[in-house]
Every structure is written in C-alpha cells, then in structure tokens.
Length: 445
Image 1 (cartoon, rainbow, N blue to C red):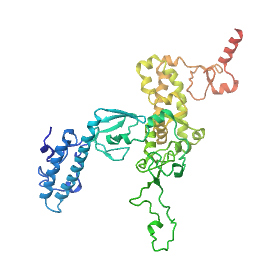
Image 2 (tube, rainbow, N blue to C red; image 1 turned 90 degrees about the vertical axis):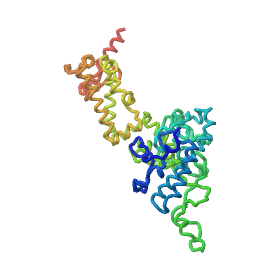
Image 3 (cartoon, rainbow, N blue to C red; image 1 turned 30 degrees about the horizontal axis):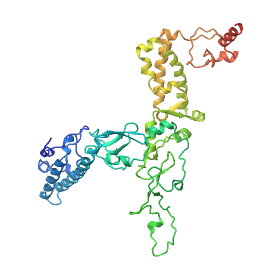
Image 4 (cartoon, helix red, strand yellow; image 1 turned 180 degrees about the horizontal axis):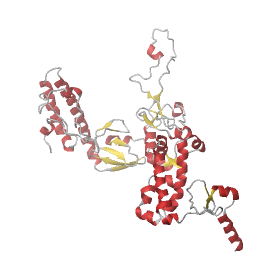
C-alpha cells in the first residue's frame, strides 16, 4: 500500500486527457514554484484505488491542517491550501461512507429491481462526473461503489438502491415499442394530485407574474409577491417542471431540464428543436434512438425533399438486396456485410425510420450515405458482376436489347409476378405479358 508521503508530490500526476489529475484553481496556478513544494502540495492520486483509505486520508487532512496554520494569513498559499483541505475532508467522508456500505454488498453483486438489472461497480470506470439518478448526488466513483443497470444505464449509490422508484425504460419499451404520438399531451397538475409523476413529491407552480390575491396597498404587502415569488426557503413544496415528451409534471430531482429531440414534434411538424424532458423520458428516447419505431405520414414526403429522396433510394435498395443476397461473388467478397449491414432496417423496409435516421436526414448526413451505398451496389449489379447482370430483364413490348432492372428509373414492376417492363410500354398496353402466360397455362391445365 502506498504511504502517506506518496500523497504529497511536487507535481500532480497527469490524467488521461493530459491535464493535471487535480483541478487547480487560478490562484494555485499563480503561485511561484518556490511556494509549491513537497511540504504544502497535497494531492490525491486519481488513478490509484489504494490511496483512498480512511487512514491515509485522515493523515493527509491532519497534515494539511498544520500547513494551513503555518502559512501566512490572507496569502494565496493559504487560500489554495484551504481549498485542498476542503476537498480532502469531503473525500474522507465519502471513504468512511463507502467502508460502511461495502461489506453488506459483498453478498449481492447484482440485483433485479423494477426491471433494472443492476451490477455493482467497485473500481473507477472513467474520470467523468457521474450523478445518482435517485438522489441526484455526485457519485465519486474513486471512493464509492455504485449500481448501474446494464440495460438502461441507470446509476445510483449503493445506499440509494432501496429507494428506487423508476421502472427500467428498457422494460417499458419491450411492453410498448412506440413513442408518444401526441405533442406534449399535458393533463394538468391537479390530475397528478399536485405530486411528482414519478416520486410523488409534493410540487406546485409559482405565483403567476402580476397576480396577487390580496390588497397591494396594505401594510404587509410585498412587491416580491406581487411580481411572483416562486418558492421560499423552508417550504415543503418544490417547483413543478413539465416534461415535453409525455406532458407530465415532475420535481427537480426527476426532471433535470435535460434537452432532447421530441419524436412527436418530428413526426407531425418536422421540428427538431430540443425541449426539456424528465430523466425517465430522456433515458427512453436515448436508448430507443437507433430502433426503427417511426412511420411517417405521407404529407411529410411532399414537404421535405430529402425525405422523399431517401424513400426512393430505400425502395431501390430493397430491389438490389434481392440480387446481392443471392450473389456468390458478393457474399465471398463481403459486400453484403459491408454495405447492407449498415442500418439494416433501411434495406428491409421502406416505411419505418429510427429517430437517428430522421435526425441525420435533417442534418443532410443520411442522404449522402445512402447515395454512396446505392452507387456501390448498382455498379456491382450492372457492371462488375456477370451473374447479377444476367438476371436482368428485357422489355417484351418494345424488344429493346437494353437490360433493365427493377431499381432503374422509368420502370414498371408488376405487383403480382415482379416482372419488369418500361413504364411507357406498360402504359400503352396496360397488362403484364408474364401474368397472361401464367393464366393461359392454368386454363389449359
């Protein structure tokens, strides 16, 4: 185990990003190299789990307190040391709390609660700040163990596992694989009994600006109430925040004002402006973004040119797939896996989109990607592969020797037998010669 002296270094250990392992304040960076030395620089090694024992942190706090008293009053050195002392004391309390919780968790490495499949995390997984979805407190993953759902990434302190109230959104999606179809279907706070929709904490609105049910000329009147004083300290009621996804009201612990694209606004209005949503709705949208769950109405294709172009290319790709999936040369070269496995639902269906698809269409990224895939597959079928090219068609009406394919432009594909003709030829004749031959053969039998 590292000694306490290892906690005192001339310079902080570098983090993976190349910066200092500790966040130095501006005043600390202005200190001269003489004032920062082994006697007054106390740092906690972010990458070493063994440095976070209660004994070592207690000794580090004691040493830092002595250095504070020895430093000059109101100096930059003392300000910086006080900051380090506060940090060390905080981490000491977290380490004590972690030691009291961990023995009881050795038995249960995983738990299943409200559809969540929790797995205990002991070791630090990253340097990014994490927050508990139950109590909203910071998860110090260097000194604290915490639970994380392997399905929806819900995170909570080990001490908060029994206070869980949110059902796993992965389970909700398996039961109802559809987005909310209405735009912010607000139901009113009275129908929620003035409680948070998730944790049932009492919530309310602030006084409306400009309204005050009292005499503004009375001696006890306060302008702050006249112009709206939302919440005062000591009140048992907290702010009500509306989720733009489902129209419900939440408390600040369940609604962090996280912004997200709303599927219903995209489906109805092609509106990608992000709106504040609750944490439960944000998790649901986040894990379902790549799932094909959206079927658009026909009027959107008429107003959004990129959307209509993507739909046309998808229809042509579905015809190309029939050639590529049965081509031995394409399978051996990995063309099928390399091109068609990219967002497979775009090839398997022409009507269903994922939310990520629509976002990429709006950004102009999806259309260019589909065009490149379309070009590669078309060249393989019409130019590179003799087997695929031999499966083309020749129009029986005009007897043109040019080989045509179902994904060509100005082509008619018979809905009954998938026979391919020129569109202008079929318009004149209005029948499919292959279907006629099949009917005649059936009559003879």
